Image (cartoon, rainbow, N blue to C red; front, top):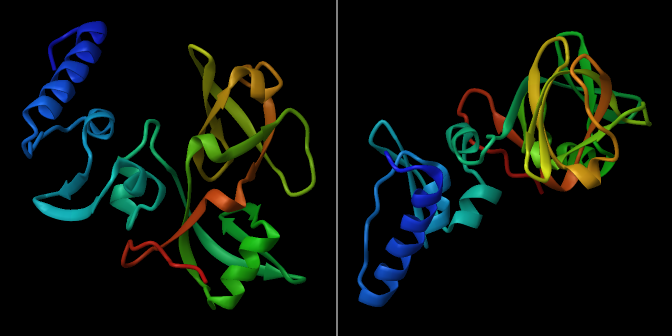
Length: 207
């Protein structure tokens, strides 16, 4: 943990090669979830000594079983937005105070089929949010409050009245240069949007 960034990456590779050469089961304990994903064949995510989820790095990343795992795994971590499901003229929305986030049509049909209602938590990773410089159908306005350039991508902090969230986008894919104070519009990727039960914190399985 005291190594500089370059040596730290070299040490990860060395330890992983050593483990493969020795061919023995190895338990590597770390608080760095990025390190766990890079080095582990299987990850055991724990909170206060209790196992929350066991799986490959991809399984844990793509299918978090509860809010703790969703918020812990990933850098930046998954955006978690609390609100109440609302239906108007056959369309679903997540209402968070004064903000109404349109739920994509296919996802709305799954919510209807699963009879999902009431207060829930919507989860979506920063890289799975669409961001536009102008309004399009189904998008919601937000204000850019911080921009962090990261090599070939941007990590963008946005505020939407009742909540803040992050977007992570490749600079070439984004299509515009984000500026602090700029208005932009976001929409959800329906294939990568999750819902969690607010009381139990468990992920809601949709049909």
